[in-house]
Image (cartoon, one colour):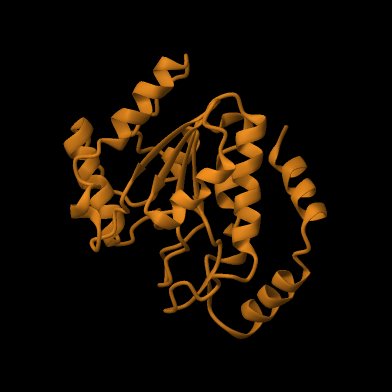
Length: 218
């Protein structure tokens, strides 16, 4: 199984023609993030056979030089957004790892699929592309991972991500949940939740190589 096969199956099962037309118009007339050639970056950097962990985000960052197709990640040299800063604070508390760059390409190459629920956004308009069809696409991706992989750890932060639980076979896979790392909720249970060590303990328990959360090389 590979992403191309999964994409083909999804696109023959659902009609995305309205979403495709919407995106063609949006990219032609507005500023949309991420750049069109990086929308599917998460899949390019984390091949299907390499997926060990899935971390779900909401929608891309909506400022310049931020979004590049990986949930929570920003382009090299860009200031850390608040949620990512909180993720790094918890990483340091959990595993004693200090990270400085906001580009999570290295995590993607470790087998962490950094998947947003919605893969595009209009500049300065968070959630602008909610409801155009991306949720159907990403739900189908989660379902395909659940069906075709033997064991994956799904990290679901916040209630929108946790709604994806219905597509995950918990007989085969592990779900790790907490509130979202956003400054609005992080102090209500994200800090102290130790997601990174939980992921690695679960992977080891299932005979899989743990994630090197400290990896920096891109």
